[in-house]
Amino acid sequence: MPLKKSNPDLILIIATLSLLSIGLIMVYSASAIWADYKFDDSFFFAKRQMLFASVGVAAMFFIMNIDYWTWRTWAKALIIVCFVLLVAVLIPGIGMERNGSRSWIGVGAFSIQPSEFMKIAMIMFLAKYLSERQKLITSFRKGLAPSLSLVFLAFGIIMLQPDLGTGTVMVGTCIVMIFISGARISHFAGLGLLGVAGFAALVLSAPYRIKRITSFLDPWQDPQNSGFQIIQSLFAIGPGGLFGLGLGQSRQKFFYLPEPQTDFIFAILSEELGFIGGSLVILLFALLLWRGIRIALGAPDLYGSFLAVGIIAMVAIQVMINIGVVTGLMPVTGITLPFLSYGGSSLTLMLMAIGILLNISRYSRY
Image (cartoon, rainbow, N blue to C red):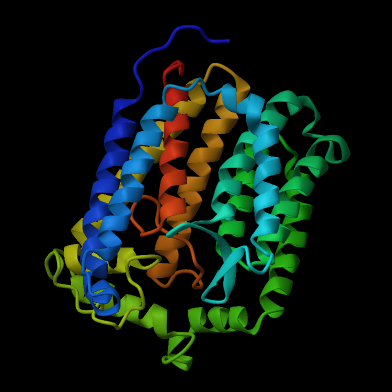
């Protein structure tokens, strides 16, 4: 075990807090009109996001001082708890339904999303599994199949909610971790074909998903229904131009783009701050991912490397999907933009994950 600690990665801290600060400003700007109309309080979402951010930052700095291999000890227990919560959320009276998805459990005036907790628990467990069985990962039966079975069991339960976005991020993250552990490309090629077939089956099994695909290809086929969000998002990004309309000057947040403080916050940011503002956010994410990759490469053991890779892959996949959706490059799916979108579970868990990454950086040799 590494014994000597150094200072945490300062650049990673700066990048994270910069994104969080931009997010807090944009949550207020994007939600003020909607919050004033619905709750008679223009700061309703901003105040709650500030609370989530405060809890998340405190947790980040607290976890930064917990030796990361502690999570290897608790990985099995944590993933069992998360499986229990995933099942519990499906039980009427326990799970809360929003927009046709039963993904939340109410806790007082707030709610938690177990699928968000499952993402980080799965990363911890898979990092433990891969670090202990790396020599077996080239064997489909002894290495690859057991790890993928657990991942797809969790994915299957998440899809019962249903929550394709979160499930996709979790599976994508785990695939990256398994791939860099040394799994055979031939195995991935076969599984890729099965994955495409399975994804097609998931799309065809739900009419609303078919509409999302068709609206992605041509949103103007159904501009008032399935294509509405993409069209309104592009109507926000387009007028932003190079420098934007100015902070607080968005037009699309006036009830054109539904709940713009969540999945489509990047559209409002691009409208108000323009290409320059959007590029700055993307550059901050690139800086965060670069530092994460360096930490993973310099980690003193395999568990630390896999854990860091999982966290960075989770952030990267979520950013790519969210911005891809907002800019019309991908079909609409409910995925938040890390550190910027409104949402308690997502924001808090993401900051906690950065805390783990910061602790690894204290032992990383780079």
